Amino acid sequence: EVQLVQSGAEVKKPGESLQISCQGSGFSFTNYWIGWVRQMPGKGLEWMGIIYAGDSTTKYNPSFQGQVTISVDRSVSTAYLQWSSLKASDTAMFYCAIARHGNYYWDFWGQGTLVTVSS
Amino acid sequence: QSALTQPASVSGSPGQSITISCTGTSSDVGGYNYVSWFQQHPGKAPKLMIYDVRNRPSGISNRFSGSKSGNTASLTISGLQAEDEADYYCSSYTPITPTYVFGTGTKVTVL
Image (cartoon, rainbow over all chains, first blue to last red; front, top):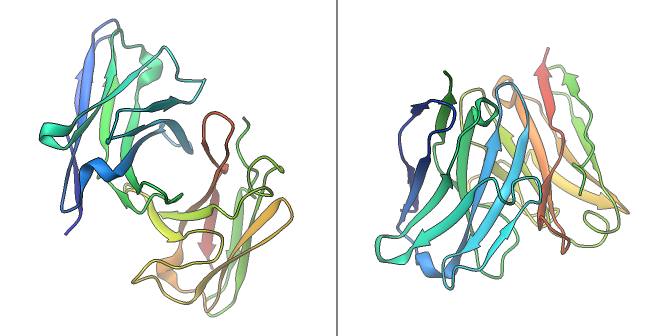
């Protein structure tokens, strides 16, 4: 059974760093792209960026380039989304999703990680 | 790359059919048959309903169908049911950064 399990909710202060994770199981991790999606409170979905687990090729949405870092650790089948200095405007739900290499659709999604940034 | 344009809301009575449009450009929706549709219930993760314009993943009801004409894709829900009340998002591949783009989202209300 394919599963994507995301790390738990986080409450942080502005300026703090953070890394959230997305661990996959039940599929060949290195044959998949992993994407990160932001959903701000009451708003729509936004693609932040995608990473190919096979070779770590990463493509960022220009709106998020330089604001976050996406990475993978193939040894533990886990993708990461990292901030070096959080802002209040980073408060949102973050989802990971997967697409098999060669496909152009995201067929499995994690349960989401809520990040709250408040002083 | 701007978000794809969807109507903010669509409503229908149980049993009726509704259609949600998703308008992009020749660089995304119009240029490739890689349009997907997602359903999102409140507090839940998005769920893939349609991929590659018109294909349904295993387990998705055949009441959901997709199509495309030019730069506009459409999702039709036939035999509307109370459980279909949710937000719906289209998404398209584009070779231009950021590679994928979502629609603005449509709230479906079952009257």
